[in-house]
Image (cartoon, rainbow, N blue to C red; front, side, top):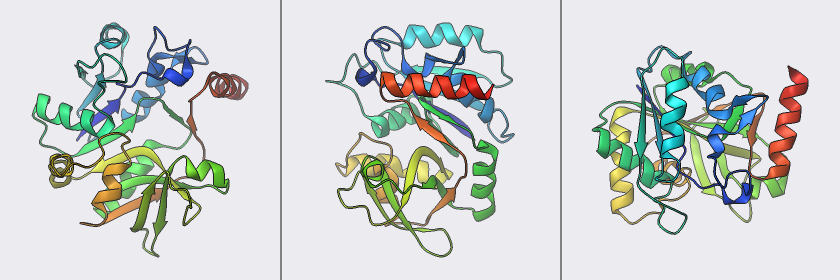
Length: 246
């Protein structure tokens, strides 16, 4: 299995913090966000490589970070050669770019590079292995305005997705999907089909919203927190939480 960290965005809502620094390398309690992610990836024995996809602007930052990375897994930094929001590929576009560039023919764990969370990524993986099903990450959220900003999911009694909508105006359930996914080897090949059909390449949740209509997609509903650091205020709040907890 390969692990892919999505870090090719420009995080303009976080300006000036991310004007000259990628969001994934911003420190939380004096440690870059991406390090929290790689430490969790390292707990999954099936993962044999970590891939980070970045852009032309921040590629040098990640190559420099790679030199300081001290984990056990090899790391590959991929430059998608975009320069700003006007020509970005979108998250799904970046996933396919990496698949084609590196010739990936394997299972794929995908996680957003700005995710900082308190659940165990190994539990997510173990649920994937147990159900032998493409897997999304979900949590119950009762704030309707927050649900409108996320992918909204309805599940059956077995935990399979029966409805998934990206950022709906009228959420059908109190279950939200976060930007972490595990796809089987045959599913990874379907990302190209999704894009070739002209579907939205932007948010990563658009792909499983299409996929569940074709094959089973299951959900792992976690307990704990997964923070979306979208604004300077949110960044400060998460820093305060982690500093207090430590």
